[in-house]
Amino acid sequence: MSTGRLAEAGFSLVAVLIGATIMIAVAAACLGAQLAATKLMNESVARSQLEETAIFGAKEVAYEARWADGAALVLSTENGSSRIDLHTPVNYVAGNPVWSTTITYHVVPSPNDANGNGIHDEGMLVRVQNGKSTVICDALVTGGFTATRTGDSLALQVRLLKLYRGRPLTVVAATSATIRN
Image 1 (tube, rainbow, N blue to C red):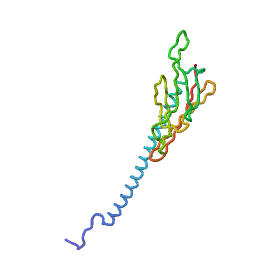
Image 2: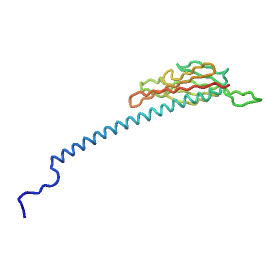
Image 3: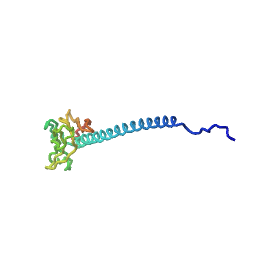
Image 4: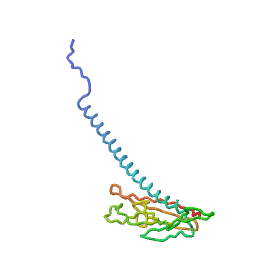
């Protein structure tokens, strides 16, 4: 038996279009948030890597300075940054230290352009002993390595700069060492 009315079931075209529009808007908002979070996370990773490099540089110098001959440790300035010349014990004879050849920590020009200004004005902190150079860290800003001695305490600071997606990231690592010899 038919009553003459068509049975209506499901959603109308207007309801489907409104639902699809809302779903697309929510998806776009989620995608925008995801992209922003990914960008922030990548920048945090780049900053963390730069901080790790700066901390390693400061701690590397501090470790060796801690065991240096305090009377022979020389601080000077070279290329706008500090320079450290020191000797560490390599052996002991009858309770007296046998000192190493001179170890120098200083900043030399870097072949990299970390700040992206087209000028190679950054530096590398290097360790030199017996003519052998070892790069401790790269991307130092001008004056980016400072060492200050007060009594038996040596304060060290390393400042690095790196360009990340057109924006400069700058980090500073500082430490100190008590000279024990």
